[in-house]
Image 1 (cartoon, helix red, strand yellow):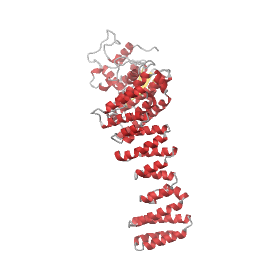
Image 2 (cartoon, rainbow, N blue to C red; image 1 turned 45 degrees about the vertical axis):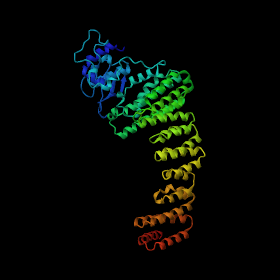
Image 3 (spheres, rainbow, N blue to C red; image 1 turned 60 degrees about the vertical axis):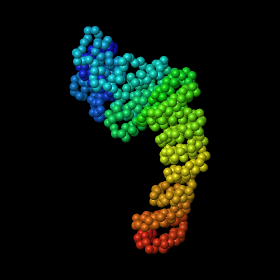
Image 4 (cartoon, rainbow, N blue to C red; image 1 turned 90 degrees about the vertical axis):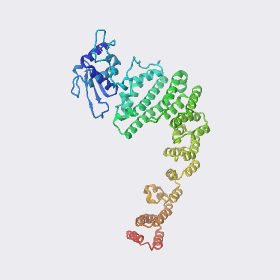
Length: 546
């Protein structure tokens, strides 16, 4: 069946739908309420879910549109020629035929012919006071699909036309969003030169990040029906999925070839990051890792780098710059010091970061880790320890994990131990973990005694390796803990002391030192003979032996 002309589509729309119904249907389409539409070309039938704006996704209608004659269509709302069918019809025109909806909606256009007219009430969808955001998503002129000769700006113009945020605001899951956007745009470049195709896909990912930023804003976030924590997890998953793809792509891009053949595209990429990677307020998208990854992996070139450094310095000197934006600009500036091997200059700038600055430096440390720059990673971790304590409190788990990875690859034990001791008591769990891994059992036990921990404060599995290999090292800890509990002089502490004594008795038995156990038990009885409650609990211990 040959497809209709725009004029024929216009006649079909107005023979089936009233203009107010078309307005409602068009809004449903442009707000992204048409989801999971399915085209059956053999039966000329189009089906979809259409949700109500702002409603929970459990509330939707299921229109079934007959492309042969709209009047043969059906919808679960049970109304004839409803707005849900109109929304589906607009979806078919835009998505399958690439016909501009405005040609249908705007009376007096070329699709109407000179003799066509409409009632005075049917002016234009633009007259609706509710058109608002949706109006910005409809093109005033035809937007061409990207070609190998297109500019980066033309790519993004098409991306925005194809996927305005209001049309994606009801997508319920990460896979749906990612597959819809990336899967809908990336294949366009499949026949292009591989490096140009890589640059195009890079901008598809940048557009995806920008969409996530917009959709996570309050204007869309609350219409999704999630609470804040579910929203945060959803967008965190989406960001991680997109960022992982970005890193994979950057590993395959040929930087030298891109700089030689597509310098304009690279400059446009730098310009895009300058506009979007420094938001005035924090959102769910972490732009700085994106900025760092693309610049360090692709954009580094002397003239372009000099321009960017100058731009960052100018922006940071502006009087109205907020502390958060200042930190972003300074972090970006640190990137270029790191790339040029100017670590002293980078540390000097890092000391100026205002809020939890060590977290902003982690991308550089991850870079050292991924490229095997172990000595450099050690130097940065050592330098950060006093800086963190003086300016930002205590390190977080990521800092200690970086040390752990370093110890697996590099002889840095002395430096690690020096830093862990500096950071006590916050570093104690991580220090103890490494001591156990290194089988430094005596130091592990000594630290638990020094910080007042008893074996009852831990799981048996925590010290099981010592019990299996050097059981005798545990004896002083048990003796010390028993004395500590008795000194608290209350019935509950006495019970806990006797629990430890039962375990101690078992240990002495396995060491074949039963006589030492008897001497110790008699010593406790005599030393604390006046503590009647303790003596009663010790009686339970003797009873247990029988």
